[in-house]
Image 1 (tube, rainbow, N blue to C red):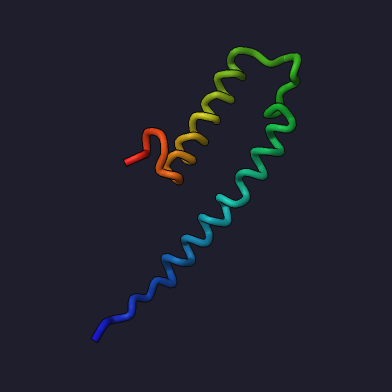
Image 2: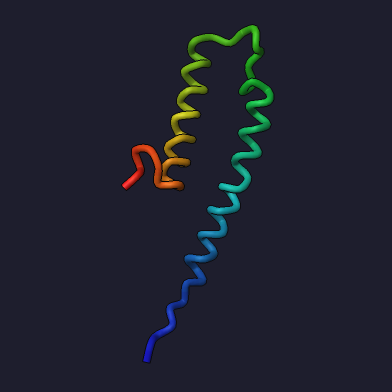
Length: 73
């Protein structure tokens, strides 16, 4: 006889994380539309580095999700 596993706690935690993941792209798009709270004429090399680090993080997440890039097996 097989035992049924109660995954209700895991599912609840998963849904909480998924909800936050779903909301994050919209927040980033809004912030990007505002040049990440920087005036376009005031963009500096430091801002380029900051946005580059954001992009790097997003690429890591995307690559891990789709098993691409460095995350490919």
